[in-house]
Image (cartoon, rainbow, N blue to C red):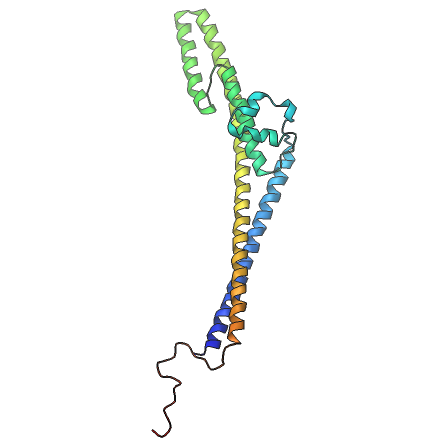
Length: 224
């Protein structure tokens, strides 16, 4: 087989592969644009604004290492997945944690409050059976506190879940953008190699062979 033909086949194949990589890159880039615009539109419609820096409490600023994002986004309208993650993980979560402590149930969550409230209701029933009115009154206040806190936790966890889901959607868009950039780099590499192959194909002798049988193209000495 002629070397020029082989180089041309590989070069054309490389250009086709580059075209396919480019198309895939465009598709992924489109997905990233859709994700970004969708997240921005949906979050912007909620009109959630971060508290100004001077309104943040020390607890909000220092609750966890990541809480510093509340200062970075202070006063901004929530429009990105990263902002949604910050608000959910450090603003809402901190307030839920503080509410649990204030209500007398530190570390409690919506899930754990169910059993806590159930136990308290059972204690109220037992106190009533004994005629312990003081115990009934004191325990009933705890039941009411647990009930109120559980409602707060349910609202907080729902909002947190929605915001973190939006953040996850934005991450998918970011990954799509990264994949698109990688595909475009590969496409550019394939184009470069293909062009180099075409140039090489037309600078080598036309009759140069590759994969030729040993002795092919060798003429026998004259007179033999």
